[in-house]
Image 1: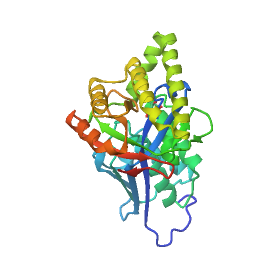
Image 2: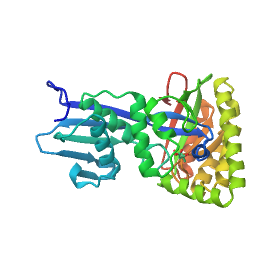
Image 3: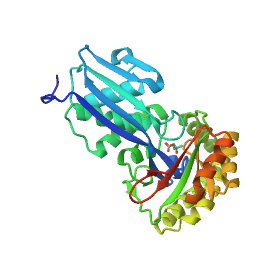
Image 4: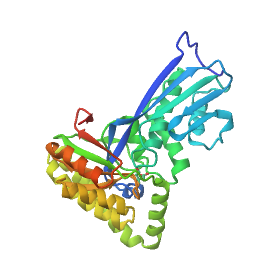
Length: 326
Ligand code: MEV
């Protein structure tokens, strides 16, 4: 097999990748405006790879009901594509015999980065199984190639925040910048339970932007300002300013037509229950929203979201040390 080094007795390799939320700037980021995203480690994709007595590559991904041989998948299937790209990068010419198990707690098409997390965890696990270590830059570039093939015109923010597992201030095509969290703050994430493909909302925004470029450029500029002020507020520990910024960002996302009645209902319910601000997060039209809360109110806001129809909630603390479950 290709240039694979001797494996000794190692027969099981594991790797994980977190989910993510976008605090400010989704959609505008596709048009080169800045956006802020943070990893969410309470949800994750875990990939394990085992030597297999069977010939070929067997893939199990119960979350998407996939139990298949690599050869039976189209080479454009996102998982097949990742595997083939890793083989190419690692110089593997002959397919090894192995089993790949992909377990995910990130709901699919929900704005939490499930696609990018599968790519990143799979690239990490497979390259490590092949004893070919890849840098974060290489992993990020590969995951971005997969995102491009499956999401039309992604900005690259999802694969970046998930690969580096750090808060990022992201501008498409520019070197990765992380940002400091001056004072920790609490976010409640509420899931509408409605799956919505980012590719579609991004495509719709593009059609509207082409039709009314002036208005949409103005919306993107206002969102960019919010992302910039959001970053400064987080870095200087003035997190109380973030609620108002979230509300403004949500209104602009409504103008972009990417909210939905269910998202608006959860955003409203969070505010009524005492959140300092709330907005949808990610591609929109379904998926998840986020609310900024005082820590003591996190549980009651989460309860209010469930009463308003959320299928589940996550409480996450955004801090310099990393994210932890509340
Ligand atoms: C998706 O998480 C964020 C969007 O801005 C799309 C992208 O940046 O590729 C909606």
